[in-house]
Length: 155
Ligand SMILES: [Fe+2]
Image 1 (tube, rainbow, N blue to C red):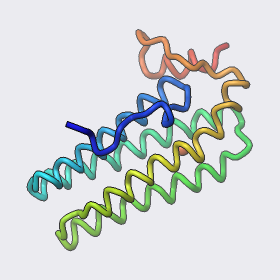
Image 2: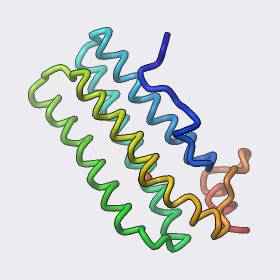
Image 3: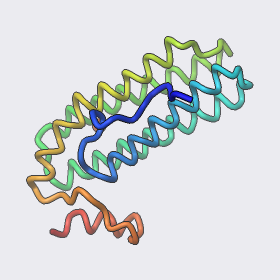
Image 4: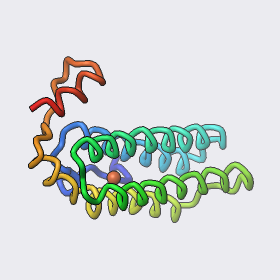
C-alpha cells in the first residue's frame, strides 16, 4: 500500500541520526493517516497524536543541543520555529480532545507540510554549518545515546 507520506531522498539532510528521527516523525504521520482512514477509535488517534508530540519535543531538543554545541548562529530563530511547530501540534491535540471532532485529511495535509517544509527549508540550512564544524554524519551504532552525543563532538 502506498504510504501517505513517503520518505524520499529530498527529505534527507545527510546526517544519519537526524534522518532516522525525521523518518520516525514521517511514520507517526502515516500512522495517524491510517487510523483516520480506518476510522479507528478516538483513543487510538489520541495516543498517536500524543506520541507525535512527545517525539517532536525529543527530536527538536536533540537538534537544539547540536546547534548549541556547535554555536550555530541561527540557533535562536530555529528554536523559535520549533516552539511554533510544537504549539501547532499541541493546538491540534487540544482541539481533538475538547471537541472530539475527527481529524480531517486537511489536518494531515497540514502535518505533512509542517514536517516536510521544516526539514527542507530550515533543517537543511544548519547541516553544512554543523558538518563544517566537525559534526559526524554517521553514528557509532553500538554506543548508548549519550555515547553517541559524545562521539559527535569528539572529532
Ligand atoms: Fe529543526
